[in-house]
Image (cartoon, rainbow over the protein chains, first blue to last red):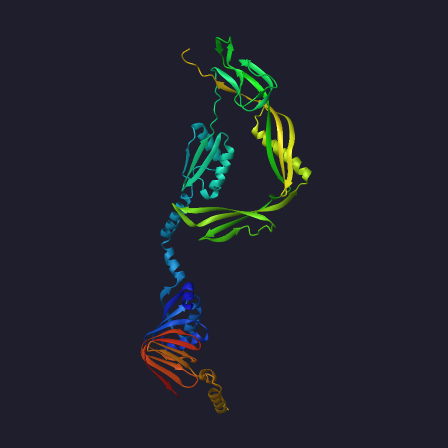
Length: 396
Length: 93
């Protein structure tokens, strides 16, 4: 332990030349100077180790005793560093090499886009530039892959999904484009048939022979407008066209719990930054937890790479957001009201956009296990016509 | 007076089982074979050479003889000597 300190501070091996080496040793001890490894060389020469910080004190003792000093060796860290500094170019070169390698391996070198047509690819690259993903950017300054993926998917409109993966220094964007099917104009001869069971409300026929009238009851698949017109014996085939509005009954079931608790963010947050060294998290910036009563924490880890190897150092950003537990409770009447709205929304998903809701009715309602269960019935007027091609009969 | 004190401390040592070096201010010498010798309670170096180390004690001197002597550490009351130790002699003068 002691000898290690000597090395840290640095010490010198000196030759003390002159008579009476023992009195020199005694003087040193008396004035509290540490000396060690005392080698007698011959009658009037002694080799001694002295700490660098005490050389000056020793010199005054030597003057008093008319002794001479000759420095033989310099040992310990300060001298070693001095010697190493002489080759500083070498060391600096090595360090800067590692530094440059480190920087370069944390840089984006390549961005690949697969699965996109040129137009989408161009737009995607432009969107990527906007959020900072370009060649030459440092990876550790960018949001992580998940975040990039989310932002890009939000920005791009004509894309269903973008998969972002990072392979070392390159990013790969996998694009799945939206395929908007073109509406085909069927012009062949066809009938119009009912898509569902309904009571006919009104009939508008542009082409073809109407088979049903208002207030008729039709089943699914029954013929509404025939594509065969003209005389019975010699019918003519046409492409039936028209709108048949029918009254359809829909049943939706919704459940509304009377008591619900929610977790909402209050908007207050604290960020904490860490540097993780071999799994040990050292806080760098942001030390308070925000003293939130309820909170959620999200961790964002960005590892650093040297060439292709993941370093044991990574940067961690911890987001602490305050949450608020909100309890919502309905009375039975309120619950039914909310249930009705929910049911209507449910219905809107099922029916086509141009459908009209004619009437609604609460069919069943009961309260059990803290929930209100409502079954709603809706009368909806919608277009029930769908095309059915008429097979061309051969051999006639 | 000094004689009385010496007698008292000798009595204390024998009857109270106190270590002699503490009570009577005597040197405590520890040796490891011929390689090391560790002396506590010395009163300074009288002479030092390759073959001989003479230490002042409270009473008399201690002469250590041998070869290739090196003082490894020296503190006001302790000394660690290395080398090949041949003999340790007490000299009362």
